[in-house]
Image (cartoon, one colour):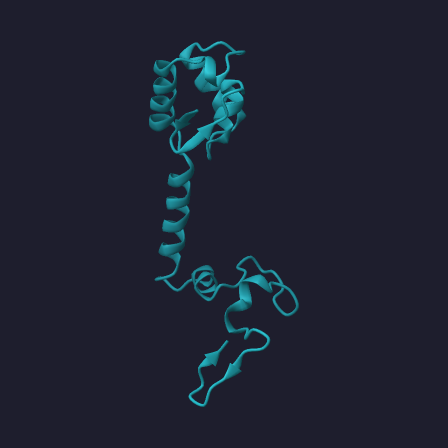
Length: 130
């Protein structure tokens, strides 16, 4: 079983289909990588050589933004919004929806911070006991 950039490639799939398992690589990018390396269209992952897999990893690493880089960039954008106290930064900080969605009756999952579970009792000092 081959691994490319932290993603496990299914051995019985074609290379272009298996590459789409990597976050940030879609069908078009997978076809471009395969074409640049001159890999046959019908070759499967288990039929490819170690050299071909290393070449695929090198090309994807230098030309494409992959899964963890996308997440890092998204997190950096959020961290940039919070200190400048813009509306979106405040909503991110409070865990509320930021694109104008209704919060009176919806958005339950992002407002769970203050909810006390059923059956929890308070001690005298105000702490919750489960």
